[in-house]
Length: 469
Ligand code: ADP
Ligand code: ASP
Ligand code: MG
Image (tube, rainbow, N blue to C red; front, side, top):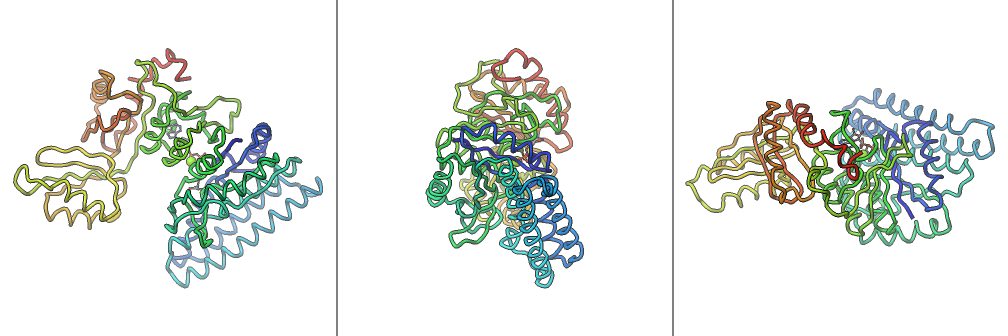
């Protein structure tokens, strides 16, 4: 058994959906559970509809709903041409009916939001959960029309979550038995199952979503529940690369990496994997493979518990998170007063803010947070016992590789390279784990930092054929 997750660009139009059907059919013998994202851009468009409605811009919202309807109806028409076959005619009628009905309800919802002028996270989830329903419907009918046994399962019957709408936490104890009960009998008789990523429901059946880009996480949750042999994440690049390819087109494919390395990279901004994806896979020790749906013959990146790489290629990849806020605090009390850090952490805990990077000295602390919500209130509370300086437009950089802490010379290579490129470093964190070296720079220096570190660590990459392409 296999989980195959396809991201938004992999199902963005009729040609892409046909291509996904080919990839899935090729793996038919391994009985795939197929998890899909919404067609590229659709979740954002649904969010816009909701926001415009709540702002009273109903006409714009209704026009956007019509555009979403037309885009999906056009995909259905391209996939299921009239009179091609009875299956094709049925698929067209079913898909168009569902899309039209959903869009009518969406319009009604938009009208009532405009009256209420209030948008709750719960209502937002009713909007955004539609994208995955449409894309999965289209893909399942495409498979059906090819004559394969396929079953479309509503993920909301399987993935049970808490009621933290828009970022709901999966309840594994309830989800795992449901996944076994609903998916397994179908897969065991050789039926391909198609379901949605990103969406779930509370125990009471209210629709939830598990956070932006969460389809990877859904795939891992289902894969772990079914103890599949592999979780495949199909996307629009050749695998996990040595840097973000949108900044550095020459970034190299990493053939093999460990769960820890992948988790660290995902957390520090490599969008190719959702940061939570790796955890369920680690728990069941299920390999994760990242693959390119535009080049399905490629090997992608295999993420497992493999042993460490040879010493010269300890560094596997670099990632960054931009638009970060840095907060620098100086204790207004005497030197060596105890309890300063405890008090400081209490403020962040109270505001449910997680701190990403931290460095301390005798008199002060610098730390970063990745969104500036509530910053005013947090700073005010901190000022009760510290001098506070806030800096914005920073980037957190993360250099990742197993055994970095115990390998001599890595830190010096990182900072000498940054110095040569004229990049100023404001905060450094190293030694917190074996596998990452993290530092903070200004947003404006991201490109220079990626380039110089890539040149430093991956220029000779051709020597390490077992790790890099
Ligand atoms: P999907 O819609 O398939 O989930 P995403 O857009 O979420 O795809 O993730 C794939 C994108 O992640 C790539 O197109 C690439 O621009 C970006 N990315 C950032 N860092 C990396 C990296 N280190 N390796 C590969 N891709 C990366
Ligand atoms: N469609 C959702 C999003 O855009 C989930 C995903 O694509 O993973 O956030
Ligand atoms: Mg993604």
